[in-house]
Image (cartoon, rainbow, N blue to C red; front, side, top):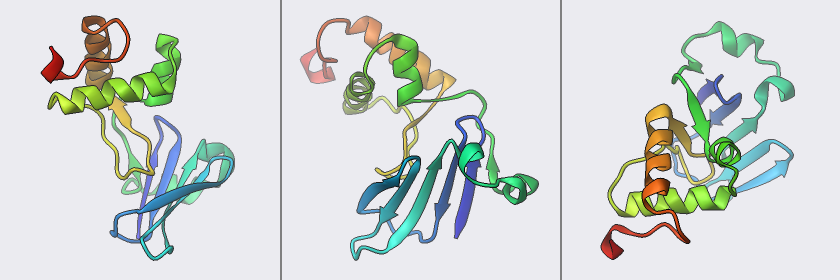
Length: 140
């Protein structure tokens, strides 16, 4: 079992297995369960964890707390830029298709975490591709 608390984005991830998630479901607001191919829960993600669970024991152990510096998510970047989350997701997809590494994501059920450098790269990409959908490298 692996427990990680990302204080910068107030997210708690609990992984019960190293098996990849095949599906995920928000079972109640802020709680996303990840299931393997057999339907067993392999992970739980808690958004706004400090408001939903007692983190006292987790915060006592530095091994559980992940410090990544300034971290953003797709939703926080979308809000900052005044665009929809899907617009940021499409930008990231286009960047990845152009072989530009941007963001980190533990599994499809987990959010994409963006470092300051990632945020800057996304903003630059959007400035270079301002109209309509982000262009793929092959189109440029």
